[in-house]
Every structure is written in structure tokens, then in C-alpha cells.
Image (cartoon, rainbow, N blue to C red; front, top):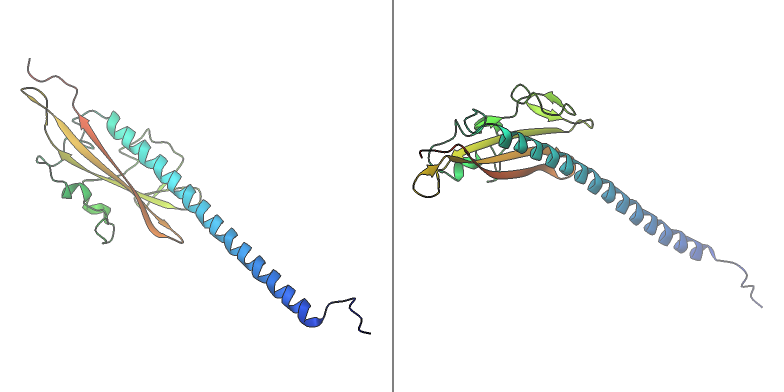
Length: 180
């Protein structure tokens, strides 16, 4: 009579193989979760930076050189994307109307370092911030009200996903009464 009280070597090897495939799959899931968390943290930081800069731009007087004073006088949607890589090229902040500078925003939170025209967070990730301004008279009633469109970009490099960006657009208008 045959003794069936144990496992054969082949059965043990198959069980170890199946277990190792499961462990490798779980390890890859963990790696993807870590990448996703890192990407989410970077996107959240970029969003906070972008919203803070946009709020500063909206707070500035209408005729401030960082906002509507130096924009194009005729509305040009393509010019609002100057410096961006929306069409697939390389990002070129120098081609934009304005680049972020700590000298221009002394009240900006000092949570970040400013290195090589980029804000750098504690993890070493650099965020490039630039914006374009386009004047467009916003017609209300008989007289046009001075207004402009501000298109803000925040770019950063993600280790696994490459270049990432957020884009913000707002309409800024002068609340100073004209005429009557």
C-alpha cells in the first residue's frame, strides 16, 4: 500500500511558484500605489501654487505691470498659450508675457525655495510658473469696461509620467468706473 501522508517535490515547487507570482503581483501593485501617491502629492502642490499665484494676480490693481497693463491690446487666444507645450513642443517660460519671481511677489508663502526661476518644494521638485495676459474690452452698456484674460501655467517633472502641467484661466476687469 502507498503512503499518502506528504507532498511530492513537484507539488511543493508548484505551490511555491504560485505563491511567488502572487507576491510579485502584490509588490507591483504597491509600486504603482507609491507612484500614484507621489503624482497626487505633486499635483496637489502644483494646484496650491497655481491657485496662490492666481489669487495674487487677481488681488493686484488692474494697471499693475504683472497683470493687465502690459498685455496684448487685441484678444488673441493663441497668444495666451505662449511658452506652454500644449501643442507638443518644449515648455519655454521665457516666451511667456510674465514669469514668476519672488521679487514680484514678496508676500508669497515662503514654503518653497526659489532656484533657477522655479519654485522648489521640500522633495526637490521644481515648479515653473508663468502666465500670459490678453486685453479684451468687456462691453457693458455703452462704454467698454477695461478687462483682460490671464492664462497661468504651472509645469513640473514627474519621475514616472514625464512633464506635467496645470493651466488656469481667469478674466480680470477694472472695477473703476469710467465716464459718468
